[in-house]
Structures are given as C-alpha cells and as structure tokens.
Length: 334
Ligand code: NAD
Image (tube, rainbow, N blue to C red; front, side, top):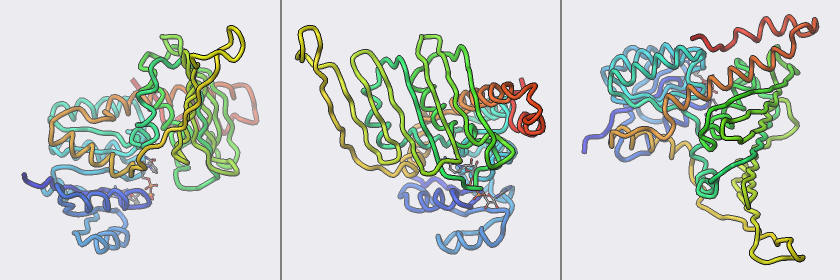
C-alpha cells in the first residue's frame, strides 16, 4: 500500500506534536512541515528529518493530506487552498471564524472528494470513548473546563478556546437541536470573555449547563451526566470515570441501593488516535469521526453563547467598550 504523503502547516505549540505523530506512523510519510516563522519551520523540520517550508502554497503538489494548526483566523484561507487542490484536511478547532466560512469549506471538501476533519480532540480522549456506551439517554449534563490564565489561545474568547470542546461533546451526546441558550460571562484579564456559563436546552428535553474559565487557580475538566437510573462522572484531566446506578436491592422498603463502579481503561494518546482516525477515514473513504458539519455546529453554538453573554452587557456602560470589541470577534454570518 502506498504511503500517504502528509504535512503539517503551523508547527507552533500544538503543530509540532501533530508533526511528531505523523512521523511516528508506519503507513504515512511526513514529507515536510511549514511555518510562517522560518526558524520554527527549520527547527521542527531538522528534529524530524523532513523539509522545511515557509509558504504553504508550495506544498500542495507534494502531499495527499495536511494538518492545519495555524491560528484560528487563518484556518479558512489555508483550508480553502488545500481543499481546492484536492488535499485532505485535518483542521484544528474552532474550524473557522464564521459559520459561513465553515459552510463553504464543507461544500469545497464535498466538491473535491476530500476528508475534512476538525480537531475536537476530546472525542478521542480514552475516558470519553470508555464512557460512550454508558451514555444512552442524558437528561441533564453539566461540564466544567477551568484553566489558569495562559496568553496562548487568548486571541479568541474562552467560549471558542475552551468551552467549544464541551459544546462539541455535548452536541454529539445529545444529538438533538438546541432550542434555547441562556449565558452569562465576564472579562477578567483580557478585553474579551474570560469566563462564561451557559445553559443549553435541547428539543428532546435534555438540559446542559456548561462553565468555562481561563482565569482559574487550577485546571479542571469534568463532566457529569444524569440519566434515568444512572449518574456518570467523567474526569478528562485525570482520565477517570465512575458510574452510580440504581441497584436491584433495597436499603429501605421502596428505596433502592446504589451500585458504584469505577472504570479502568487503556490510557490512549488522544492526538495519535485523532490523526490515525483521519488517515483511516482517507484510506477507507468513510466519514471522519469529527466532521466539518460537527465543527460548524460547535462553532455556531459557540457564537450563539458568545452573543448571549454580550447581550447581557447591553445598557451597562462599564461593559460597552468591551462589548464593541468582543462582538465582532467571531460571528454567525449567513
Ligand atoms: P501557536 O501560535 O503556538 O502556533 C501557530 C503557528 O502557526 C505559529 O508557529 C505561527 O508562526 C504559524 N503560522 C501562522 N500563520 C501561518 C501561515 N499562514 N502559514 C504557516 N504557518 C503559520 O498556536 P497553537 O497554540 O499551536 O494553536 C494553533 C491552533 O490550534 C489554533 O487554532 C488553536 O485554537 C488550536 N488549538 C487546539 C487545541 C486543542 O485542544 N485541540 C489546543 C491548542 C490549540
């Protein structure tokens, strides 16, 4: 079987790990890495023994598939270039900065028969994969994704940076349209939303409360799922997962006991799984695990949450300057 020729565009903090994973795969040849910063490109290329590029436009004829790990604002242009050239794309999250751009990329991928996968990496977190079969009928979900401040990622608000991971997971678990959104948030360190909390209501009756903050003392990435007869607690950080469910025994007449179970599972490398799944989707010509449509749905929901937060600031003079800066950041443009 011919090796797929792959490259990584943008080898900064996250992109260098993408490059390492491609380099480690048997059925793939990492033919080069590209970064607008020549020193960054050279350093990673030397480490991996591949060619360094500074202009991604010189790469299309040499490769079958790329990871795009440049800052979010450039995703649309870079993706459009490669999809138009018939190159398969794994683009980091968020897919683009507007829903209209995401729609266009999805159509372009179809037109050129390309796989378009979006880097919602938590879908490949071993703990979620282990818990997935236990999640049949969620009635109420809550998620917390908290992190200490880090300037990397602060070019977009915390909803696009952190909460979007939980938005994608929850939309995938509930699999019903969102009927209403209520959200609150605050700028704390930057001029944008640094913490937010949102309540999503779904057409099937499920409700989800999501909280994300990038101004917390310590990291936390947890999700609780309540469904008839069971309660699941997932910790994405420590990769642990437990279930409490109604037992067949009674502790008092009419009051059931609770069965508690801690699950153990293989600690998988989520990025390696994500990239292997991308390669598999190309080889087997099937839908990727996280499609362009999934990326667009997560972005659209993130935009609606951001708008709901800034709507709360209307009429409050202390927020007006921030609102004018925050609002046009990413938007739904139909
Ligand atoms: P970064 O700033 O560390 O790296 C981005 C790199 O892209 C830089 O080295 C920059 O020089 C390069 N670059 C910029 N424009 C370019 C262009 N036109 N052509 C080639 N190279 C270009 O950023 P990062 O933290 O690695 O984030 C990159 C992307 O990954 C963002 O979209 C971010 O949202 C996403 N991300 C996703 C996760 C996740 O959990 N899935 C985590 C972190 C970042």
